[in-house]
Amino acid sequence: MSPRAPKASRDAIVRALRTARSDSGIARDLGCDRHRVSVIRKGLGLPRVPKQPLTLEGKWQANTRQLDGGHLEWIGERVGKARTPVLRYRDTCHSPAAIAFRIKHGRDPQGYVIAECGVRQCVAPDCVEDEAGRQRLREQLRLLLGGPDRKPNCVHGHDLAEHGRYSPDGRTAYCEACKAERKRAERASAA
Image 1 (cartoon, rainbow, N blue to C red):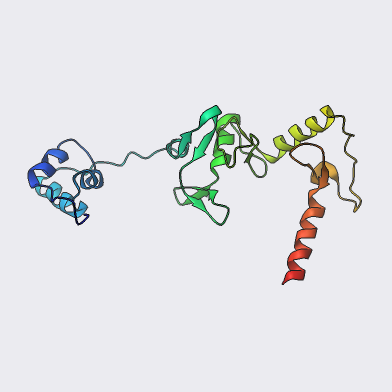
Image 2 (tube, helix red, strand yellow):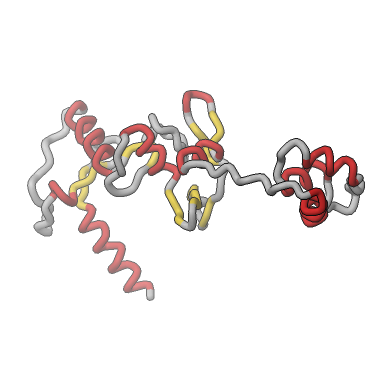
């Protein structure tokens, strides 16, 4: 209970208990201690209100906010320096973008899911794409812009059907395996 909140009367708590609300909800609304609400509930012989568990998609939806243009902002938990959206559900962490992808496509994503709409960390189902879809879109953009077909292998011999990637504008092709090797070498030399 906050120091400025008035102490809720027993009668107010009893009235609230008869509306079939949770102890926490009543305590929050009346500005009183949840334990006090629980003791009064037990004294009256009233059953506890069962929790209404949300589905994974329901919890995802409860943690989004509509933005202009059909985009969705994640208003739930974020972690790390990049403030990456995360959804904890039944002791498991989920990517809100991956949930949005499953909502749209009805299947699990392949690789990372990110927004392709230009809105940072948007989680709208229509805006997110998995690795395979993202590369397919970028390859189509490359071809529409008159770019050449992708070579079968990079200069280091990696199969570009597996490791080939394109920049968001479709103009630059690169090898993800080579990029990962360069990053490992940079980290090793920095250590």
